[in-house]
Image (cartoon, rainbow, N blue to C red; front, side, top):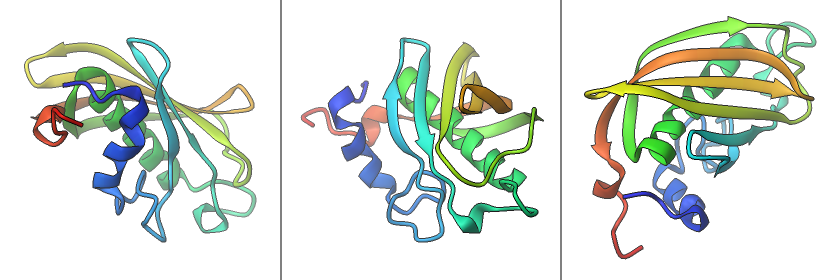
Length: 151
């Protein structure tokens, strides 16, 4: 069962403590603004905080990796209607990330085979690609098992 667009925020409350998307996690990334851009692509935003810095003047690579992993997982939720876990995640860092300002995350759904979903993620700032991810995610539970049909 597909989560209705106007109820994505309500579904997120199930994961309020998630490190990447949970808004209640005090040390989390607080990714926000999840929405479908098309039938094969979703987007979200990320506003880094000082604790997400790596070396002076850069966004930590592990934070970038976590953000990309999360947009890929949400791509499975919003486009394939399934919860999913990461099987593989290949990262390509294109340029250092600035530790300030707003980033945009884009996830796109590729092909699938059985439980395997191929998903791509991109982290952009000011229309420049900072990092990209390609991953295989394993479908676990249908979204409908967590999201009541009457919602």
